[in-house]
Image 1 (cartoon, rainbow, N blue to C red):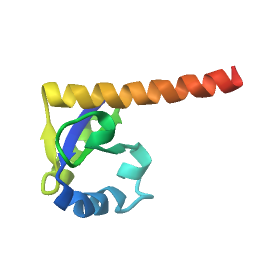
Image 2 (image 1 turned 60 degrees about the horizontal axis):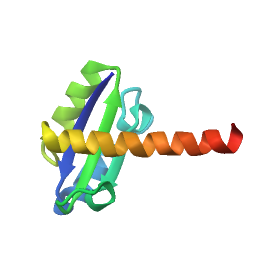
Image 3 (image 1 turned 180 degrees about the vertical axis):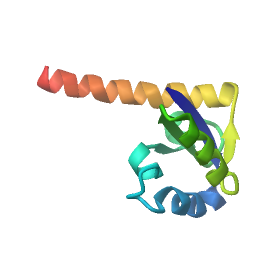
Image 4 (image 1 turned 90 degrees about the horizontal axis):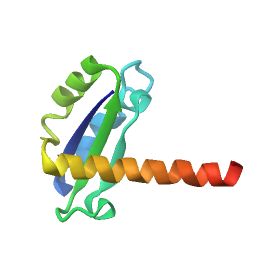
Length: 104
C-alpha cells in the first residue's frame, strides 16, 4: 500500500479541488480511489494551507496523481510528510475505534 502526501498553498486550494473532483466516475479518479484533504491547523501543522493524503495499492495511480497535481500542489517527503501521515492515520484509527465502541 502506497501513500503520498501533498501540501497545497491557500491560493491553490480551488485549483487543487478542481483537479481532485474532475471525472468522479472514471475508474482511476481521485473520488473512486479516495483521499483525505485537511487544513494544516487541524493536523497540528504550523504552515497555513492544506494537506492532501492519498493511499492506494495501485502504484501507477500514485504516479499519475503526482503528475496531475504537479501544477497545484507540492509533493512532500521526509519529516513533514511523516507528520501528516501519522496525523491522518491516527484520526482514521480513532474514528474506527469510536464506531467499534458503538457497535462492539
